[in-house]
Length: 145
Image (cartoon, rainbow, N blue to C red; front, top):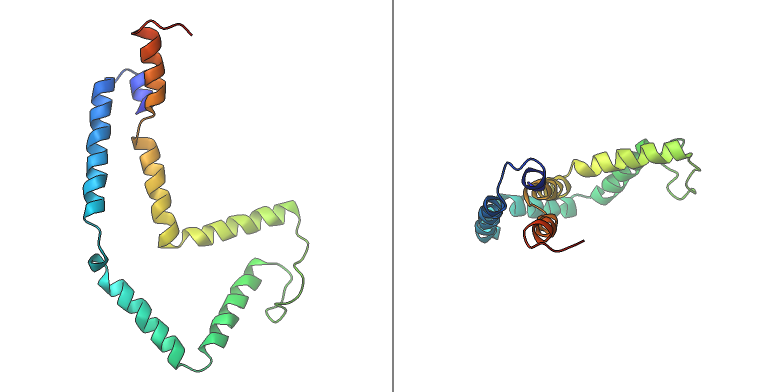
């Protein structure tokens, strides 16, 4: 939006502010509609999973085993049973690759990717009015640099 106002002159600053106001109104109304009742199935599913896990014998051991297997898949040259062993020395490239894998796995979770999409979207849609104000003060009001 800031590019359209400053460089391309496609949108008048007043129209830009109007678009900004409408989008903010939309986000405000959407936020007012949020409640715990919108997702009752999700909460009861987690409670049911927690009860099943507490009722089953050895479920904690299985969860630890699965977590150790996932960690071993990410770290090279480490067996699943060696959880207490010191971390291997990794080169810069291996650390970079490990970080990319961990970021990718984190992005698979809805709690991570939905806010990320929100912030990226609002970053594109909400204009930075400080630059427009600066040029307004320079050009229209005649202030010097």
